[in-house]
Length: 134
Image (cartoon, rainbow, N blue to C red; front, side, top):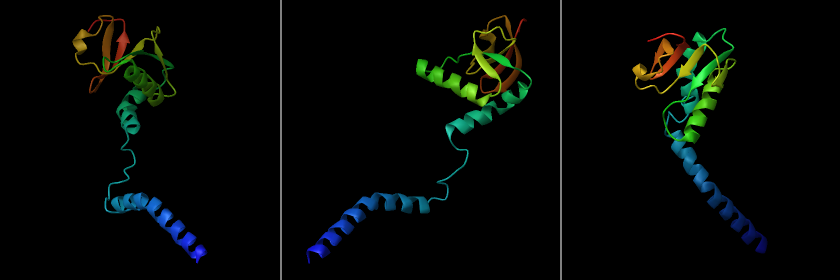
């Protein structure tokens, strides 16, 4: 009798512990879009930067202008995501590289005069070139 009570108690505890997981499984089974490969923010960032990566083919180093968005943590995260998305190109800050990446540019007319727009990728993402006027 004691063994039966212990078995019933263990089954009840296990069942209670598994109820939230079962609830999640039922919700996922009823939702056909629960798994969308490529729907995460890192993949979206990589897709946005793919044309830029292609344009930088053959370049070893490119300079980076941080965007005017968010706090210092957001800017640092953007820098590391940019480096990740553009591998094998080395993305550096304050380098002498002839090409410069600028993202989050709201008004290209306010860029420094020593930088010209080499290519506009849309959405405020630019590949700039040193030496010239726009």
